[in-house]
Length: 113
Length: 113
Image 1 (cartoon, rainbow over the protein chains, first blue to last red):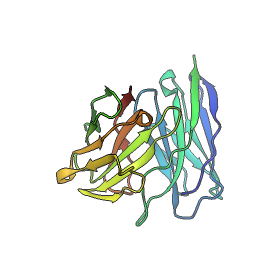
Image 2 (cartoon, chains in turn purple, red; image 1 turned 120 degrees about the vertical axis):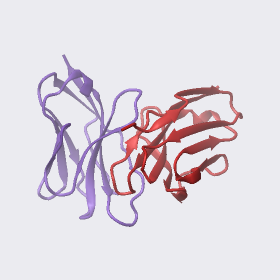
Image 3 (cartoon, chains in turn purple, green; image 1 turned 30 degrees about the horizontal axis):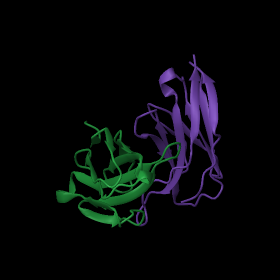
């Protein structure tokens, strides 16, 4: 799986959009971009994933650049409960060789009141 | 739908003692994973099951760790004997199939005295 680079920590004001960047310059054509988050003392929680197109669900939006070398997770209206470590992971997710997730250290997002 | 259930939530034992963790995945999920998360790090895969078959156990320290998934549903992870370095959070995750998003339990926090 390709490696990812994320900032160690970020702050965001409550009610504002939180934009979390991720660099994955060595991503392969068949690798998806996944985002998980982990709130203190809980297991990781799946947020969203995508291959090429931008994706949106009830939790967040995922913007992937045209060259797929970077992406941004957007939490449109951050709340205090969004304070967590956010992991960007690239992973083959189709036939053969799909294994466990390779977590880095993630971005510690702190939502400020 | 009920999430992934793990027990116990916390376990404290003395070194050289045996310990076991239990995981009940989401109903209908064929793929089950065990991860270990050390303090300040992201989770690391230990083993992956497809139904009752262990298809990736390359990261499982086989001299002291063992796992089973009888009948392809619940799973147990065992350590015997435990060492000081085994102190960590042990996470279980499941997915509908191997190429679908993984859903995690809240883990078992193991402390070795």
